[in-house]
Image (cartoon, rainbow, N blue to C red; front, side, top):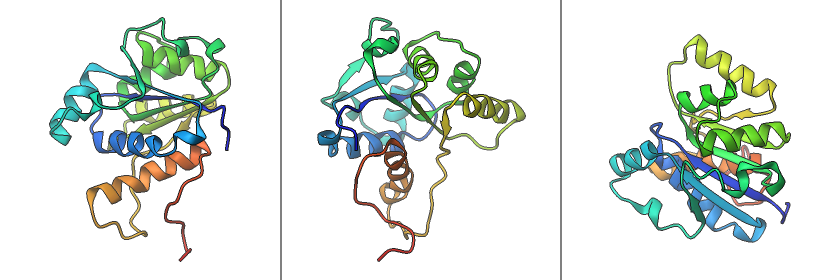
Length: 189
């Protein structure tokens, strides 16, 4: 556990708003383990959230939210020392721009900063099937130090609801960040 943890959560327009909601809700309960959490949503992320979840609850979080074009946000520079960025869900377009070093908005700029500073970047990709272009972009990001964490839910915990199913991914992300939380563990009772 690192109480100096500063986390950026970016939400793109890929399908899978339930993952973003689950992740943000869980991190809300773990704020005692982090120094700061910052949010940034793409325009499409907001529209997909409204379509998939039927609400605009993304407006209700208490974490500071930054505009997708706010290049004055602290995490647009490595000197701000944000040490983890999670893009959940991550569209293939966003992943492609990150893989090619194209920083055309705050999400891609922050990801570029995280990679260049050798900090933790987690992309929760959601698309399927994958083209060779997607696979090569995943390879590039992995070779650059990023983590590709596909939103492929597991079933061994016997999830009963969509929220339980989404939690099989978001709990994994929280483990990757290094935070302590209660979750189902394989072969534990």
